[in-house]
Image (cartoon, rainbow, N blue to C red; front, side, top):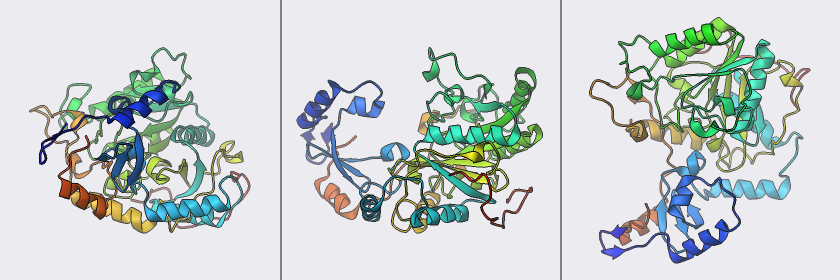
Length: 411
């Protein structure tokens, strides 16, 4: 890699990074993400959007810690809140002032009557909880997912993984069915939107009719598919899935692990279409690095049994909302910044074929996996050196009320 200003040839990884990487590799089991394996970097610390390796090289992390570090690295409010909470209490199921504030904040931020939250430690854990909730509410057993979908890799959600990762890991849990996502740039049916007249949705209807027992508990969908390459479906797609779920007596679960908390220009991606799901799942940027995920359900659904008998497992006391990743002002500023930045190309979705125009305004939405801005001190240092050392509310209820806790509350 060459520094174009100083004509300095850099060799990456540096010697200390390489030595530490090799030492770890002697004992580390397979499973590390490709970006770490290919770069062989050993990171010492981070500040804002910048990572520093053990050799002193600096990198702008456009991956944002794989969509987790929404506030960047070492945000002073985040660090202070974490230090304060860990010094007081860091595990347990008892009510705390901060958790009480967090569930109230989430109820205020989410649309409609998505006002009941329960917390978990990982994304897949929250997805499995959402699926249990759907089965509890509907009494049905089957689940519909989509090609390219990613909801985790645990046994309960592995059947919904729309990729080859699950090969040779069968048999899979029965009752899961996958159908093509509305990926118009690479249409599975080789059709063009909007002249296709939503062929993928009609195909899904036929699939349910012919392949399932028509006992569908949930349709689970990412409003924008992240792992598949930031696939933005055409406007109207989520509404059609909402209508289909209603016809089936199923719940619509929107997985916003990646898109939630400002990454698309709105607090949640579902707000671009004013579609209200029955269940919303959140993670990644929700905790900003703190191992925390959540299920946010509509009022009338959250107390369905047996799900509501609880208890939930793995939820830890969150840091104070005013200081950490749940800071409403920080979240709103992040969403506003993405919205002002405007659409960006979805490179991993590949170039559009000449006959494939942008799908009916889908470019109004985008998925931004970047951090908060690079801190001024680090940015000025980088510039001075010229360094390139890196690589509508739901019609079924207004949800205005906040009923009291009652029997069946998760513990």
